Image (cartoon, rainbow, N blue to C red; front, side):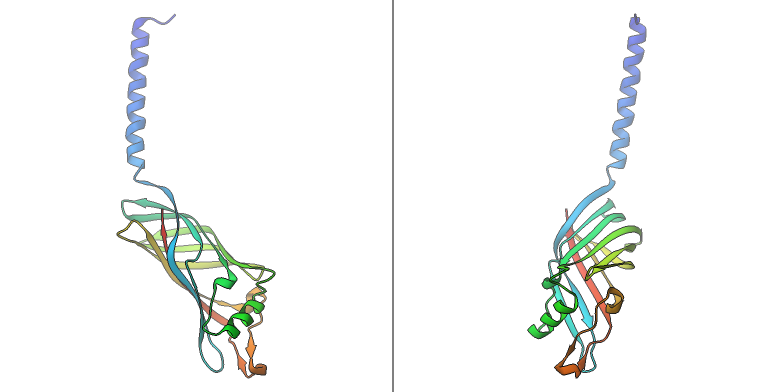
Amino acid sequence: MKTVKQLFNLNKHLRVLTTVLFVASLLTSSAFAQTYKTVGGSLKVLGTSNLHDWEMVAQNVPAEAQFTLKGTDVQDVSAFSITLPVKNLKAKEDLMNSRAYKAMKADKFPTISFKLTTAEVSQSVAKANGALTIAGVTKPVALQGKITENGDGSVTVAGSRKIKMSEFGITPPTFMLGALKVGDEVTIEYALKLKK
């Protein structure tokens, strides 16, 4: 049976432990991962052809991320994913849309996706590695994006990456019986606004 002195000492130790845990939680609460989702922004696919340049644009790209912030600075990106319906990408011409969707096998593979595997953040620039899936083909890609903390509590992630359609099993579309040929390399530009 514990004496009054032992119970008093045990109670004192519990109070000290509780105080230490409370202070530790206050110190770490300023830097923890929080989930953000898209509230705006766009993704563009920019390409070339033997006649003129072209672009397809998607607005309000479905994306989700986990950022660790310290104050207003993003310290880490522990998760980042995009799942974009192919038919959300739109060109100015309907013929371009239909040819592009056919080339990307949109009926069989209706989404383009990216899933982060690792990331490093330094001075508001994220260097990220992940898996990009287009037309049912998944390839590892490295991305570099600028992260900006906005005054309304949102975060903007912006960057670009060149890829070759042929790496994803896509044959670049042709038009006018082959008179217009689309180049294999395209540039993907993104500026996504995410908020808690």
